[in-house]
Length: 208
Image (cartoon, rainbow, N blue to C red; front, side, top):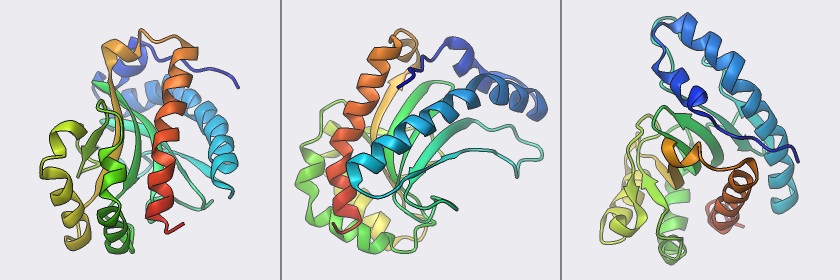
């Protein structure tokens, strides 16, 4: 499996002014890495979960004025899209790398998915202490799982179930300073280890 390494240049793409200039840098520097990760990890998910997974690299095609603040490759068992399904993501904000499992507001069955997670909350609580949770895929902010365990975790899941715009993301955020120091092999290992910990949660979400 070819190995990807992230550099300061990759993260700094998201500080470039202007839509066209940022998109050019994104297409040249970052997207080829997402394409490669897409190939590698769609094979990983297909093998681990027993159904074919497809990579979806963000194109940001609808943007006409504001440059993207983040970018990603998503993985789902559907060729034509991923937003209506629970999905895995590897992506960048200018501050950090994210490796997550996400349910966003476009998932029509998210209330059912939330109920399943509420019934298996202990699975979430057993995740490593450096994991994070978030209720908004459009924001770089997240809460450490350790902190969320008190009451915020349940509140996020209830919001996912009851509020139309409710979302839920869980995984790891790796600060830029740390991510750029990782060798390609270390990064590969960390990404795979993160997804390995998220696979049981995915199975609960989809009712397996």
